[in-house]
Image 1 (cartoon, one colour):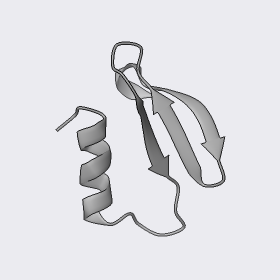
Image 2 (cartoon, rainbow, N blue to C red; image 1 turned 30 degrees about the horizontal axis):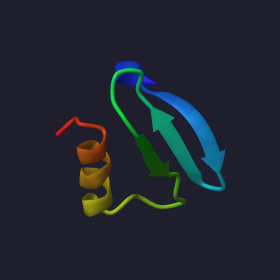
Image 3 (cartoon, rainbow, N blue to C red; image 1 turned 45 degrees about the horizontal axis):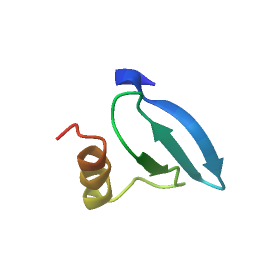
Image 4 (cartoon, one colour; image 1 turned 120 degrees about the vertical axis):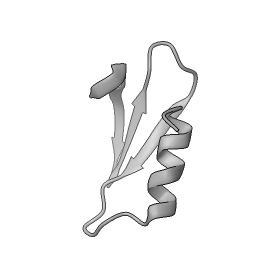
Length: 50
């Protein structure tokens, strides 16, 4: 994945990613429809991208 993130786990439709220099994990759902804008913004915030 871009920016150094790599996948560490998949549980159902949720993918978890870690970064070698940042703490914690970012969980990203893989839905059948588009993600709500608030969910996307929260994922970016957790990843430290926004």
